[in-house]
Image (cartoon, rainbow over all chains, first blue to last red; front, side, top):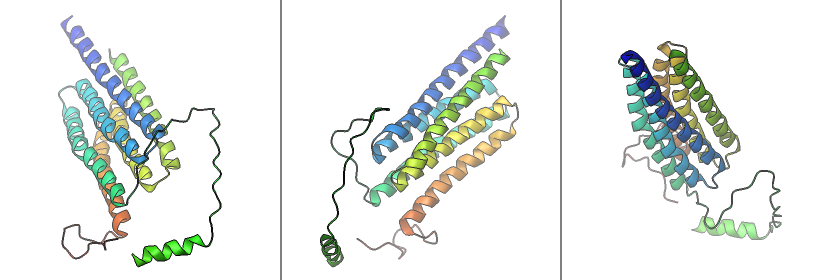
Length: 139
Length: 105
């Protein structure tokens, strides 16, 4: 009776952590796929990755009990907790250093099945380009 | 109770695979280089999680060692790729004032 109760508690705690972690992982993936801009995508990916990974690993630790497996899972959780925000910071820093511009203004996510309005790009004027280049070089 | 834990692990592994597939979409259609780096990094994190869940599903401990290795390699690979984008070379010291700073634009 007591062992059964303990097993049930183990299952329910593990299920809570695993379902929460999977929710955050899926939410981060959908955000990376659908958000308009690199910086917003980074915002979606960086935090949900850390939280989702920690929650899934916690659920697995609860399943594994006190053993070598749970020690290794704790090590993975610690490493991910250190390296995932650092990698996020490095990617954003590199993009900022490369002068990647964020999108400003209003944005509406495209609805699947809707035909996007076609923008016809104006023809580039051939005489205007060399002038701009020489100006940049002079600076 | 054993079988329900098994089904729980299998379900979460399948959802992790779905998340990895969504990230592959961003990896293939990323407009900039940094979107692709972000997608690869996030994909690697999800691979670590999938390896950990999978090794509990099959009941062997070997997968968890591989997951530790994969977590470390993923971080190092991301930093190395970013350094290569920035300096176009990996043979540069990253200390400040070592004479290898790039020219101001």
